[in-house]
Image (cartoon, helix red, strand yellow):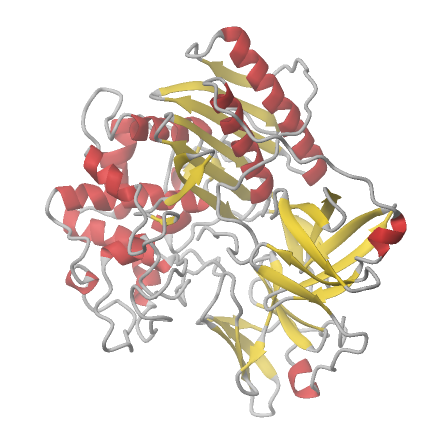
Amino acid sequence: MARELPRAFLPSAPSGVFLRALRWIGLLLPSLTMAATLEPARLAALTNRLATVIAGEQRDWQIGGIAIALVHDQEILWSAGFGEARADSVFRCGSISKLFTAVGVMQQVEAGRLDLDAPLERYLPGILPVNPFTNSGPVTLRQVLCHRSGMVREAPVGGYLDGDEPSLEATLASLAGCVLATPPKAKTRYSNVGPSLAGQAVARVSGKSFVQYQKDHLFRPLGLTNSAWLRRDVPPGRLLPSGLRVADGRGGFVREVTPVFDLGTIPAGNLFTTVGDLGRFIAMLAAGGRAPDGSRVLRAESLATMFTPQLTADTNGFGLGFSVSRYRGQLAVSHNGAVYGHASSLVFLPDSKFGVAVMGNEDIVNARIQRIANLALDLLLATRGVDLPAPPVPVTLTPGAVAELAGDFESASYWAQLELRDGVLAGNLSGQPARFTPVGPRRFLVDSRMHDAMVAEFTVDSRGRATAFQLGPQVFHRVPDRPPVVPAEWMRYAGSYGPRFIPLVISARHGHLYAMTENMVDYRLTPVNRHVFELPPGMYVNEYLVFLADQDGRPVAASLAGMVLPRHPGPPPAASR
């Protein structure tokens, strides 16, 4: 796929970013292009400020290479590479792929070959998951493009934890026997299966493979000469190598070089590209769907539909492919991408026609990439006189006051361990190290690989000791001094399952089993029976983890949302943490 980061754990992108005090520096850029829509001196000052922040993010979060492109209207103002990256380095852009797939669908809607509201079964007979919700109506293309189809997140074959490179056809064929997780239209549930089905529908009605269709109808008209849907089509040496923190099964991580393989859900997350090519895609949006030569890629009214939240009365949500929100009072359409060893963000503001694309070659650093993207937008908007909010002012707390906030906490989905470290509050949020910057006695800004200045508010008792804190939608309550013990029946499941570079790790904490998925965070499991556990709000909400045992009752595999993962040999982790 490309992973969408858990919405229960971080804000919807693009989130706001607080402007920090930045020093002015000059920086030699190894690969840079610049245009003159802004005055040269103003553009140079803007890019220097961005360079300062990018250098800091690389240093603080071990990001080897970052590339960025700034767009205004139909012009790429500036593109550059930092560290290991050049402006023309090829990255994996993850779920930004879904935007290209959605454009292909809308092209075929305009051609009259696809209908957004017709049953998807009409175009893909015999391969859709079973719909057990008999009164819900059929799954449609509109639903799969706005993640309200009820589809499972991943296919049993070719899902994000499958490195065997099955074809798109084999991946979708594995859906036979699956069922929808929720009724169509009932709720937003992010899925990589849905956009993959949409891409296959385009292939069926166009008479071309998905990859060939994209080459003919998007890459060629837009001049995307550095993009490819399959790794075999990436010229040797062009893909920027990346780093991957792999869960070691003992509560820590080991760093490895990221393996490169094609996902089975190609239309959902397999695109290889550059910031320059993403900038050209943004330029097409700014041009109302026209290519550089003036030819029509998509009608302006189709883009307007894609930029409108679908099947919801909310002003924020998913349009067709795009995530739709407001940024500094303007409409913002965007998508992020999180795929093995790469993190990315694409944001376009239709009102001002500013856009930005940022990519980095490190796994799960989307908050850091988004911070850079948001700062770029702020600096661009400032050139047009847009008033930006003043940043909150950090305060100094006594070590004693900070110590009263430390301890072990737990929410419905995650755990948190906070401690006084060198006089300041530091934390581990379900496996992700985090920094807490005080901006009030009980109010902090949280930064991690997955949080960008997210507000944490503490509740304290009469003695000033923290009883809980809220971070985004999650409320973390202090764990009792003597939490319950995990039943021995459950402890047999502790250990690692699936591919070694992206294992499912089962551990115990505070009387509960937790599941680390995709080297990201531990998810708290809720038992349904002795073998079945429900996954909490997050990436796999409304899905289940089922442990499969041999005739002696020993677990030999785990089925994570339908993906069967063999158990690793060797001792399990410690009985409890």
